Length: 454
Figure: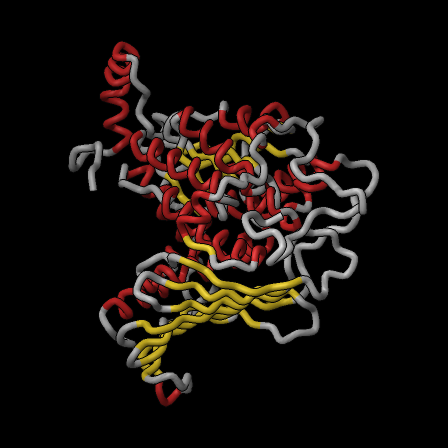
């Protein structure tokens, strides 16, 4: 991995010695400036999307210990969310939060204004609903800014194709890009992956994963005092155009971690699902999904998702091999409590290995890794992998919503873009999804609508 500084020379000293020469040379040549942080070694952060996930990501960013870092700008469409996030982050990281009112931006163009407060080498956190990811990523690349994107980063085939092209551009510009699939940074799962690759459980022959909890991702009739567009953005989990729905947003982690352990992406999905307990909710989600993913060698991943109150809960992932079993997740993302067993009876007598507890949080580790890559100029770009994981999630969702077997190539080349004009939205725009004459939003109809999800 390359480094810009010579051995024994600090980055601060290098910038001080060569900054004027490099800057003048770059300007004279008409090329973009270096991506590194400011000469005082402080990395500046802008937060675009100030909900709970954005607030959490910003807190993790400000908790990195390998050099000075501060939050300097925030962008959001809801003033109350911005205010809540600002107060929470200021209370927790007082010295590192420098976001006066004139750097707190509201509106669908707030992302531009927030990123305009950064320089090359700084970082923007993109934590809005996923529909806006390609729009904001495009501007970050144009500005030469490093990026952390919450997952999923695409919601359908057309936006995935856009992300693939943007990923290539970001690599060519040597931008550092993190995607919030934090499981890949979990130390326990990294060791588990090595053990699987080394044959500890034999060849993987099947995998299974479960995420089952109470009713979620609902949306009732739009209340008065808010536009249809803002209501759908506010309730983004309920609408496929905004988030890819509950399936993409909730289930992507386990689909990604299982595919990582398998060292492959599924090539097709066959699924069932339905709406049984949505009550008066007008959302577009099913409340249960059963998906059979097939990998190139024929191995299956069986994924079960359910959001129905009163049913048995579960949140775990497993890989079954010819000689044993690996537990990939246990009751949630963190702690993973990963372990391996001989055979397929998961009891203490068959335990082979378990990662020691307590284990570091992958939410923090992914930020430690990203900032280290920025400061040390290490190759670091998760954009394409994040888009692939997002597409595989969409493939399973589309299989359930259409009642058809959907292949990787079919979802990638599907022409149904849920919100093709999302880059043109303003506070006065109509919503990408319209309520029908029956007062309801369109929902998937498996077997009836076969080539698109609604």
